[in-house]
Image 1 (cartoon, one colour):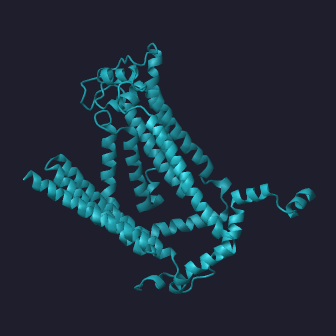
Image 2 (cartoon, rainbow over the protein chains, first blue to last red):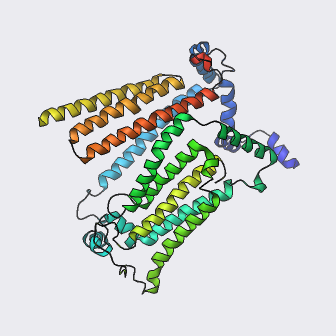
Image 3 (cartoon, rainbow over the protein chains, first blue to last red):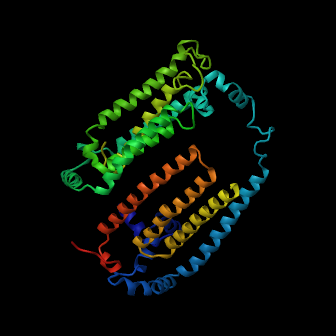
Length: 315
Length: 106
């Protein structure tokens, strides 16, 4: 202990100064007195503001630093831009057949995609049939992220005290009392349209651009809009933590089960035993529709979960 | 006829770009939040209306026209509401609001 105190009292070495500067302590000490004490009359302060700040900067030797900073910024910017431009010049021509990215994999996707997956939207056929495990990993990452955020931010008995509980109760009272009439009227118009549009994007994922991720985001934003305009209390009538858990984990499990069946039928993922149907119809292209719905549900719940946990700390 | 349509569309888009230019100037030149928001809202509503109308004229009468009209509807519904909420937040949280603008008390 005594050693530590002695070190603190001693003059700072350059390294310690640097550490303090990185941590923002030095800047705070330098900049805090530079702020004008109080702006009771804004108009008078406005005229003086520029003068005072420049004077303060000169007093603290920040004027020189400002110049160097600007020159360095320009130089570094030019250097980075020139390096990037040089790299761009070396890149192969876009779309030329000699590119290393054009190989037999892409050829196979383009030529046999419709025939093998039955999806008119080639991207959906790629990410949800050829590379379905990859997409499964992405949805799991989303689920894991929201689980971690829940662990860190969820409010329960262990990380709240009575004072915070009182505050949240007050917030709930204010929330229930005051509803912005403009917001509620408009969101009553917009939310159903947004939900229907999101469902359309999810269900049409194998026929047109879109799919689980984009449609799920639209549905999640509709849920967030509902929570903003009508409050968490009304939201909890149909969407609680229990529903969130059940819906997302069952969607992920359906995804895993429907893709893992191929392990039991010879571990050949390309040869599907499910009829593909006629390309272009809603009920076609095998499992892609089911997987799209699962991904959409997971993404929508995750979007809303992030919003709710970061603002209120509860679902 | 075809040329007239293209010219009308381009003029509309140029008008929208002009509105956006004024909105951007206002956004950087004004000092107070509510003034800046007023300038930005100009671009969000009138500018986008002119640009999308110009696109509608350029595309001609087909299904895309309807889609562009729907985008106009959505933006005109959503953008003023968000501006309203931002202004409300500024009104509630800024103590010295009377020094910046007139306040009508009920």
